[in-house]
Image (cartoon, rainbow, N blue to C red):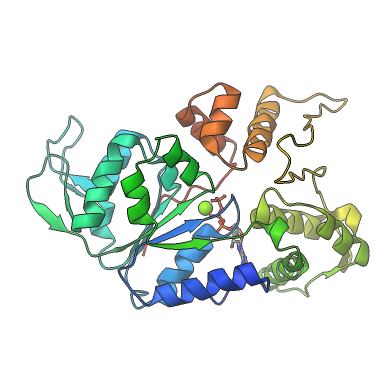
Amino acid sequence: MPLGLEGIVGESEALRDALDRARKVASSRLTTVLIVGETGTGKELFARGIHYAGPSRGEPFVAVNCAAIPETLLESELFGHERGAFTDARAQKRGLMELAGSGTLFLDEIGELPPRLQPKLLRALEERRVRRLGGLQEIEISCRIIAAANTSLHDAVTRLEFREDLYYRLNVFRITLPPLRERQGDVELLARHFLAELARQQELEPKMLEPDAVAALRAHTWPGNLRELKNVIEHAAILSEGPSIRAEHLMIQQRTSIPASRASGPVREIQIPPEGKSLDAIEKEAVQLTLQITRGNRSAAARILGISRPTLARKMREYGLYQPANGHET
Ligand SMILES: Nc1ncnc2c1ncn2[C@@H]1O[C@H](COP(=O)(O)OP(=O)(O)OP(=O)(O)O)[C@@H](O)[C@H]1O
Ligand SMILES: [Mg+2]
């Protein structure tokens, strides 16, 4: 997989604009970047691209998913702690802000950063210093921060769930990734790109798309965006035994177009086949469909489902509904 921004495919104007902005900001090492887009629109791909296209490509790229880690752990992960700072703190630990060195710290799902940690992050961004938990010494921070959020971050500010000052501090250089339904022209291009990628991995010839498959791809509205498209293509490549993919190989869910101008969308159904279905599978679908309805807004989805945001995050994790980006890389 190419590092940097070269592997990002798309010809639509909105995507070209985003790429152009990413290229420009890649070279200014310390500029904070906010990447906003629906689920599966390529936020992490862009974050990595900016890092590897810039002067710090040899330094660490550290990704943290703010929604996937419990609050107390997240605090010590980000800022580190001194020995004895809390009961389990047997040894001193450096925080990811330190460990990112002069590389990049990618804060995924920043909208889920617990309110208590928001002023701490703001201070770290403004003063470029942190203090480990239980520590007195100020440690200088030299990494770039790239944050990613879904399109509801601004609503969270209006609802006072996300601090406005932090929002403005993060929103210095914003890159907005368009949903796939607004770049229908790219769907076919991306489908071929994913087929070529698969073929390369398997050292085979790429499969072709029959006209009826292309028509079906174009007709769909892709609520899960590029991740959904990629999954549909991988699935189809397995199902079709011949050299080409037909519409029947594409496991596209029923149309779920949500016209922006209409508040009420189509009715979504959970189907129980004749042989029945496990409660887990039903719950997974309920979570998935609710997130589609709220376009990835977790606070809204949790409210509708009548569960807390951490519970929703846990269920999403359990059901593999997104790829957690915690874990450290260099
Ligand atoms: N423009 C693109 N060209 C090629 N591949 C892409 C492009 N955009 C996204 N992808 C691929 O689509 C998948 C989803 O992208 P990514 O994980 O970056 O999305 P995301 O916005 O972080 O999603 P989520 O909000 O669900 O975490 C990845 O496999 C990524 O490599
Ligand atoms: Mg992501």
